[in-house]
Length: 380
Ligand code: SAH
Ligand code: SF4
Image (cartoon, rainbow, N blue to C red; front, side, top):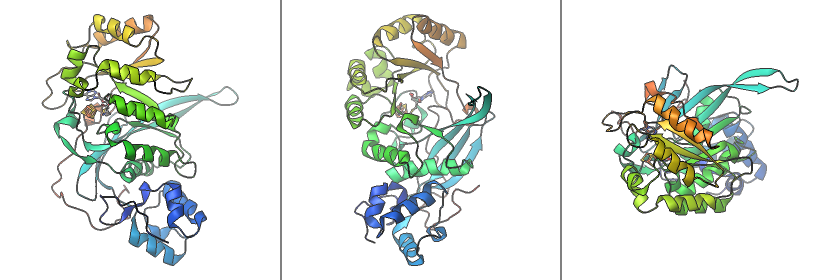
């Protein structure tokens, strides 16, 4: 076995095993089938200790333990909302913290006899960075500034940990939305690699169709993402229909304005059965009027779009207010009546500050590197 070139900065000299594609692992394993065995342990059994990977030779397990780390995120806290949403606070090896959210919703499906079966649908809201550089005026994450990108391995490990913590078997499908902390397209390479690892059929097998990237609109990166042709879903945080207001809400709009974003979306390859989601944060007396809805309609003309209206979620120090539901409904009805698919997003987990824009790095009293590799770091 030889060491791979890719060093991850966050893992105390060892490499984070979750940052390895199957091909990367095949390169470092003497026998290619061993890479599949490791993938099986990591992604089907959520194993957190190389020693327990019993079908690998003992010596090989020792080498794996010496070179690679399998538990890079330590669960520091978890909270459960009255609506079942769970928020997890993870600590990285270099002592930073970030949050991930698991949203559970009721789901109904028809079986082969046409009978309704009730089940549960899980959506994981995954962070891509600790903090964010974009600095949107309405977002709590932005208030903490930018700390660092999450590595590819840390992005993948969040998903594994959320499946394990929620006792979800490997075959249980989940959806991923990159709507946690950070701007995913500002961590482009790590994000792309993570999406590929997460979708690997020998691993978690989460189809790119079930992975949604939400972006504040970095137009050149939207073009780059389109060129990757991964089949991921795109969500644009639009929030305003004219550049003056949008630049106040999202300062980066001065560089990448609304037109550049719409042009990038028009060039983006969209699955024929899918639509690009436009997220519109409705803020009281700022952008909740019908004339904004009219402009939104003409802006999205000719795009296979759906609009998701998000009610502003308050947080400490916020200078904006939550809009009246009546106004949001009128806004939605206007768009729907003109044929634009529009939904109002339910704010899940608002009572535990797990809703959109409420996540932030927490200062822990013990903000130091955790040295011991604990196999129980994600156990309840
Ligand atoms: N950085 C990416 C993804 C993370 S933010 C983005 O901006 O798209 C996920 C979503 O939460 C975005 O649509 C963002 O605009 C929204 N959001 C941020 N702050 C919010 C708040 N206070 N209330 C409601 N939604 C908010
Ligand atoms: Fe960053 Fe998104 Fe928050 Fe804006 S809304 S500061 S892009 S995380």
